[in-house]
Image (cartoon, rainbow, N blue to C red; front, side, top):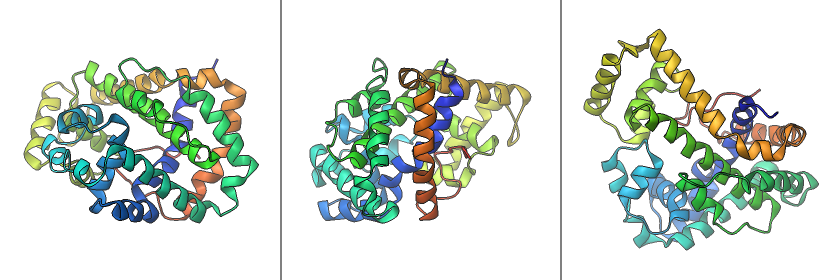
Length: 287
């Protein structure tokens, strides 16, 4: 039986590949050519595009951990620069160029790319859609014909499926978006300064969330209490469990093969410097 550890391992292997759309120069260049300005306009337009021309409330709700005013500074203004349909084209153009640089011109046509795309397609087709808006939106995006773009789209659907489940695990325990960051910082996954800057929270919001978590017995100063550490571990365990269905559909043997195929791709992304150290995503090292 495929275990929750499999879901975590494949997320950790695939996330840097998905995140090329945020960190690769080619993706920013494609976005700028389409009329988007700066990192955050690009981020919100490309990530939210499958949802359609939604407003800041929907983006704040589905992304979960951004400060509402931070989102509202970019959304819905991004849809004046590009339509969601154009943003979907932009992100594929950027990924195409980035993959060719990072992995080589021959890799998109390789047997490995085709095999990886095929395995990921099986998993992506098995995502649970009810209650998972970002997974559902990405599942509705047409699959590109090119294997390297198809595998990126499947990885994106799967990571948003996992993220939707993570949000549900937080919501169940009444942990807010900023509260989740406070716990992540206390657990040592990402520094406070990084998280505040990258998600738009200020000191007042952070300190209020920390005070609330302290009142619940989960924090002692900047450190997790034993109960807080248990809560963090439980949220992560639930996230892995809720992310498991697509990997069960793939099965243990094919999951192992997919991990084997993704490992050198991930290493190439890291070697190219396109996975910033201690970034706010907080993905563990699968190696």
